[in-house]
Image 1 (cartoon, one colour):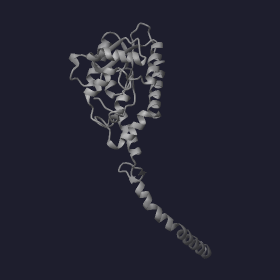
Image 2 (image 1 turned 90 degrees about the vertical axis):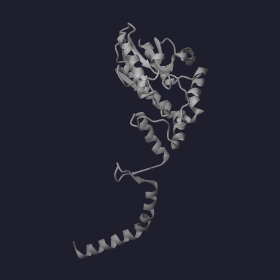
Image 3 (image 1 turned 30 degrees about the horizontal axis):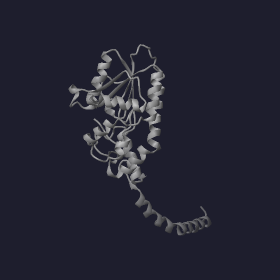
Image 4 (image 1 turned 30 degrees about the vertical axis):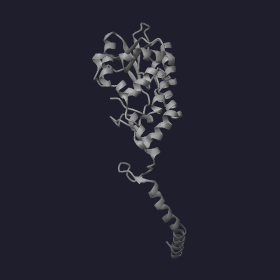
Length: 266
């Protein structure tokens, strides 16, 4: 490199540093305030506001990575409220229903009444959102007595996407079985609520009997599905808002998890 070019380069570098050094030094502290280095992500900066945290928390819950949890984080109450009362919850439910229907259309239904789709009820067919609006959207510890009082009203509305799927599956020839953690003592009021919400013509409504007391949902629902299979039913699809509605044994060929960031049932 010639000496003339070298001198020009030094002058140019000095000008650049003189013009930009002060703003850069002023900006860097602000970046540190709004981001942190994640131990897993390495040098990548990640925002740490409540919205970002709660969205990631909800992802962890829905994928079952969070495992057993009892209450939503206090910092996520508003996030969950906005989610379940807004368009995102409805949109997520529609996508799950559309995926379910797409699979259902690939099934060759025999027409003999043995091709089954199993539905959970609470937060799957019926929405208890009016109850949870009064109880912190899952931020309060669950109170069985007050929830049972709500169930007795038989006023839970249908989840619109689930109601459409329910009727579409029946039109395709599927036999519908309802499998819920509610007890036999709640049979009449549950049937009343289902009819009120627009559901009808189910093949069987299975509730917890005396012999099912004390069983965790995963075991209870697996045993009931096994009984259906022993009776000759073929369980093609299963819909539920809890992983315990879907996992275990005697599982459906395809299971579809509906969103629910308000509570967890093992």
